[in-house]
Image (cartoon, rainbow, N blue to C red):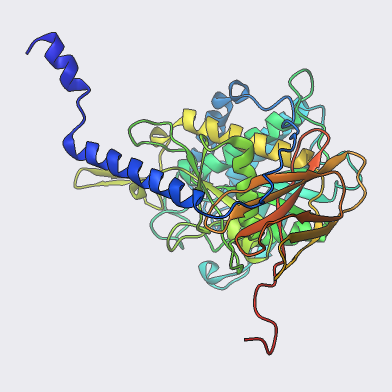
Length: 469
């Protein structure tokens, strides 16, 4: 074979692939043709609003300290196990060992920040089937960066990872459970976000209007006990949850071609149009970080699995979960061992710190922009049924730092919002010659700094009123 033949064959697509590509092109063209055959909405042409740029000074990937993340994970793995039913007093092994390392890391970060953080060791007692239905002590660690805006300081944006681990038997605290990926990786991401967003000096990204809470919690493997406590705690402190970003199993990316996109899970809630607060938070994070970074998964979690965001989701709060692209179950929930030449156990050597650093950056930038944003609009209503025009109405608290509101819409079959127009004030907005039935609608607040709130979908009330058929 000569060089020319080799070069030609290298770029010669297989026949089946040619047919697949041709079929995809035909389908795309047919879809575009069908869309063109629908009546235009609106008839007079689509508005072309001038949109504000996103906030300046984003978190850069090179700012992420992968070495510090690795060092913390190594310390947590060295605790042998972090099972929530293990010792809370032994400095060398168990949950207490992990707590001490996390607190030490946060104290170091706090010192670097000029003591901006308020660190809380939240000790509580809890019970559940995986505590043998007996009350047991547990602890959560919170680092709080209080918002600068009095009107928004009681809105809290949370990033969390769980520091407890487990082996094959979830009830045995004596087994070795290194838990490097599940979920020391999520704890490392949460702590790195605390470092990135609390810094002083030229690289600072604040101040933030809302409050940020960086969490490392226990009890996840025993039935989401720590996250239940965290939700209870933030409510006791008078906070409104503006978003909860759960990072659980975000440390490995072993498939060829790594690093890949991280998966972002969100639940649909009980709305026909899949516009739960969880789903809107996921869309907002994708808008911030980009589709090249995140893969939206429109499921609340993996099949038959659960994570700490689920507690917030079930309470109607905006909670989402970050998880690596493809999980290797040999390295989750497994007692370390080798069987038939197959190695089991959640060890350091399976981690990918380039991928993990990407996840940390994505979380930090999402937290930054969400905490810089105005409060979402209130009492959004859609009217105009059996009329030519869709009408939106909403209210909002006074905010001198708000530029206005983006009216967004999407086809009922589309996953993402598109901006329809901009309104400088909270009022009724009429979408001339736009059917109320062909699209879903929402509104989000926009700050003068370019930060957007999560979108608030219309309360459509699409079900027929009583007595109507």
